[in-house]
Image (cartoon, rainbow, N blue to C red):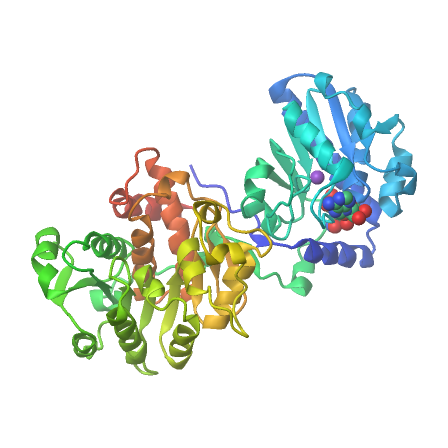
Length: 528
Ligand SMILES: NC(=O)C1=CN([C@@H]2O[C@H](COP(=O)(O)OP(=O)(O)OC[C@H]3O[C@@H](n4cnc5c(N)ncnc54)[C@H](O)[C@@H]3O)[C@@H](O)[C@H]2O)[C@@H](O)CC1
Ligand SMILES: [K+]
């Protein structure tokens, strides 16, 4: 069976969405026509949900802006469809303006205060309190209403975004509605893909309301869902007349005797991703351990920065994954500097700096940035939140924004980074400041390019949070870079492949399983 095509991948911030709206209205479509279609789509989604759960009583909570307007329109359609609809307004609806005012006036039923809505009898709740215009943490009546909806536990359909979630960042302040489903319009927002917003949305249903895709030419969005249509056209293609050197020669640096596994995981992933040749570069003391575990992967010895300089004199080595379990001492910085210096105009070299290679520079990210900017190498950095915090903890004029809570990462801050600077913004700022592609890992991995583009992945299962999983990802990126895939696309593609491999395996996954799932994932990709 053919795989369905990707949904639209552009993610629009609320202000970009406002422009899409304004451009459409300027083109002759009345704003109220957009709202009518949005409300109709909400009503349709509500009817679908009720078919699943049963019942005919709907409580609709309408806020003071156009999100509330969508709620009044949906209320009218649902009442016309024969359902029992109770509408609660937050704020006096007589103060509504514009299209929302019109929608309220066209609602023929009664409107009560939110506190008067009996949730005990509702089969479905529609949350039309705040959408794209949500601008500050909930408090007072708004907060109480959201808490009451969550405590009641009815299935909730959210309009545009669950109230309390910031559509631009996925952050929530004091609280947010927990929805079963979220109906949104024209294009998704970053807040639908970034945590914790994504988790609050439930299933996201993207619907169309009469805004033409042509408005995107004007808006030029730079944030995308990480789906194959983002990078498919850059996927390496095997040539019949090709030889293995055409698919690149990937080096992976091994740690000392007791820490060699990470590099072997990365090396195997690189080979599975399609690198023509892979060589593990091992300290002499660990050669025997590595040799005992390797077959298709070759092995070379290097102990010092000078050894690495000699090794890199062979210009066929085109990519290096450096850092996993390597150690964080001075030698790590020296070798990273040798790698960065080895690239020249006529000697292309791509580097994936991961794990200890990042920590070794911390907190002097500016030193790393200088070396990268002076280098001809293509560079991808793959920090998880803890590594990112360590590397960028030092304040500087041009420092990427890192929140105080991240400077001393705790278990909580790793699980849920501070919300006042979004993961998207931090990855973007870091990519620009360092001049490298940044892969900020997690359940909503962001890949950011120095040119401003960014992708957000939503396909990673929680089983990927397992020892060695990041090493596999670094190897996948290396394998794709070896085949000359552009850096941003290679990193995004690797993140997606990694997620899909995790999904394919299911429970009980360990990192060793991931590389060997690649053939199946790649075959599925070729069919889609
Ligand atoms: N293309 C578009 O932009 C369309 C937008 N539509 C709807 O319009 C919505 C956006 O409408 P608005 O821009 O009016 O914004 P909202 O309706 O999301 O909210 C704005 C109102 O909420 C208040 N507010 C924001 N945060 C608050 C908080 N924490 N506590 C208390 N009050 C708060 C603001 O002061 C303002 O009165 C979208 O989410 C969508 O549902 C649709 O009608 C169709 C087309
Ligand atoms: K909402």
